[in-house]
Length: 426
Image (cartoon, rainbow, N blue to C red; front, side, top):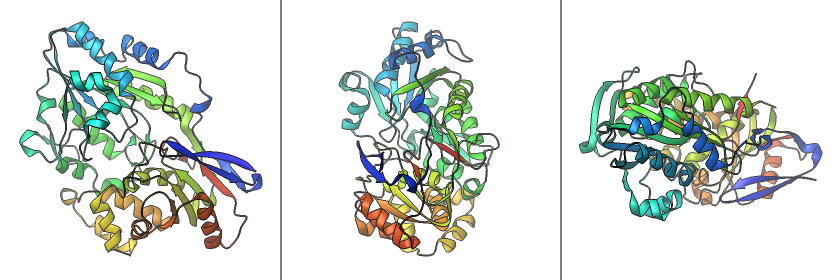
């Protein structure tokens, strides 16, 4: 028997299979990469050698009002290592700078104080000014005209009033923006709901360039870059994490150029060719990315890229926070026909995109390709409402998959972390 550990919440589930049933294990090769420095040293080195930009301490000189866009509770960004280094650099350049940490929640719920302490540590939460972005707070938004796509660009006033705007973040494969990080701190990070909805419209989600690992020709990425430049995002510190959520690469400097350095690194270690199977097992990488079903759609798209048409996906995500999006949940609960659902999305103009439509559209696309068995802590009825088959254990899921496929020896492709790998047909 072969055993593979699959991330689940803050722990892992052991998958035990006969060796002959494992067709392939698809994953990032970052676990084989040994970084030349420790985590803190990698961040410090990136700040000391910025890409395409003066050093942050140089940019901070004479800048009184400084805003740092920081990730929220849904992202495993090691802010305890990045933010202190950025604060040190800014205050070295201007000891009197007034610094605000603006939590770039996008359209997510607000980050709680407990989650802030978990991310930043008690000292920073008690000492620094922290503001949580609210995408529906119209009074604190400013319109900057139109995006290249034609949608209205509306961003947080606090960021736009900054003398210096910078951001932390991490870069991973992203299922429709190509990669996370960089420009995403602005759009969707500090954008209004209206702007996010327009950027995530059905036509863009349908575009074949709006896929994991693709930036060139990606219309969603194009809007995001425009928004970051329009907002004046002057400096970023982005990191790449391994399977243990440890920093293995850091890039700092110009929003576009430093981000490109990070995506180049990821492409060299995380891209893998699909090995197609009738049965594919995937995860969402554990906490914090597997807290709800909504987020777990990301890991499903890795399985989508490797499962045969009409096959079965076993998706593993703790989902202790439930479905993660009321509109997302109701869309599937109230519409049993995925074809009808997709037709409605595609007929919806960009400016009338509804909340979570993009996630529903991608999820429906995956469901059209394969049946999904969902291993989680979520209520079974909720899982069924979302057109999936619930399972409380891996063993139960495998037995159900065997039943659906009509055999007990189906070869299996395993993707231990579906959000860290770029599965391609090439």
